[in-house]
Image (cartoon, rainbow, N blue to C red; front, side, top):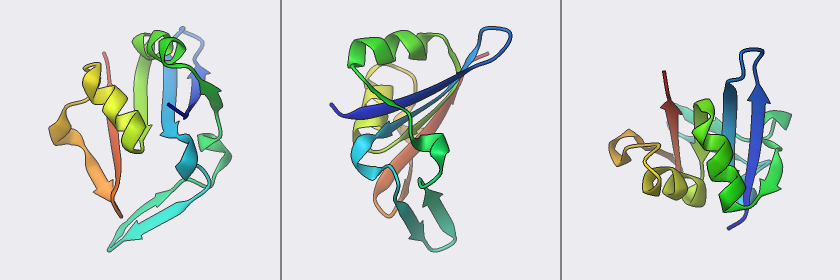
Length: 99
């Protein structure tokens, strides 16, 4: 599983995380009025193994999932509901928030 993870830790110890499929980083997808622009540095995290990803996701306050593998990992581990997935040009994306 080739996933990039970028985690930003806040002063209070919470994480804002982006998890994205490696093969779509740097690309841009448009469909009607929707746009998924993955070209910024924000999406260029580090490649991580699933065990490490899950450890970090457990501490996250906000998670952006982008791509088939990322969204699948989010659904299968209870971070996102299938009903909350948006597809832009066939690329699934979703967000998870914890309080």
